[in-house]
Image (cartoon, rainbow, N blue to C red; front, side):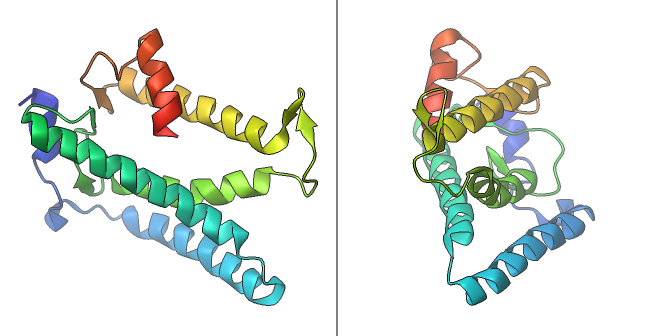
Length: 172
């Protein structure tokens, strides 16, 4: 196993590693979802909540197959998060990432206008916003990778030209 994998496995799901800052972050996520549920009860528009849970669910799927890569290879997952965290849930998934993805779908939803046919640079707004956020998120992942907080082990999943395309397509 790689050094990053061993570090990511150390303390995996160990509640004694839990940090206090997780509590206010959890409160922020609860607050956002509580406000959205309250609005949805009045308006019958559950789309923001569904968007948040959909993006979170897709990330859960990605983290699951990433764990399978580690289990099958016995060497490394495609990505690991070996650094300091409030709680490491999977080798490539920590509580900070979970909170971010729980909020990200709601952020995506509120970035869209009310108009269904709006275009940005000739592209349907939904696609334009999705592409823009995907590029931004992958840019952030590149910074995290450069800082050794997010380790990409395999040549097809790294900061190379081919690797970035795979992350853009499958990561988000």
